[in-house]
Length: 290
Image (tube, rainbow, N blue to C red):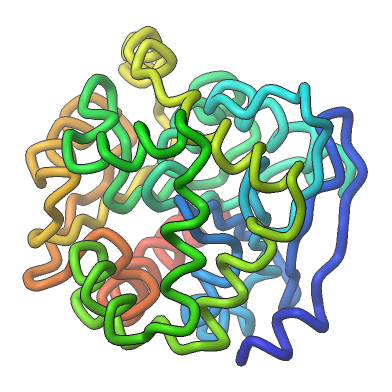
């Protein structure tokens, strides 16, 4: 799915938290995808393109990111995001999902799973915030810029400077050339659209606090939902030891898969590295449900 098609298929779900933007493709059992920062649901386009034949794939935009629109006073913490996910599923009349998440979306997914285990068929976590491993030291300068209200200017400066964009994002992508002009604009332009969206984006960053995830360890230790962990090994933000922490902590974990050479956002630039184990996992879980 290209960027134009992604834009054309965007819808909105009215929830108590705000008007949540999402894209939906395919039919069947629902697979819900949650992205990280500064991305939006477009991050999952290459994965959805392969799964839409067997799943009703839904990629939402988190509050403070993408095209989702919220009140300036709406909390955007990960706890609030997990609550929004529940409201979003209720608004669409969806009971249970296969949940797939990356980066900060992974923390949201863990919080959602801990509070709503019966609403999951399966859980798939890729490189993400876990327990007390966040915020990573590497993003401290970005958090300071967000507090100063200048972070969005850094991101917009890369719109017309692809060489600098590729260089800066090489920490998060093994192949940052996946951030073509149209893809990058689709990520950043909605964040910079108005004073309100800029403020919400900065609030997303300044809400980072691992006090939100540490308390759910006991709930994760009770989580029997079939869980897959797929982790890129060249991630400078989240070490692979956290993949194995999840594997030891969540009793429903079926497998921990390591991705050599991949970085934080590997589901976008190396989708096959996720799709291989994900296909096998979903097929096996589907058989178990039958």
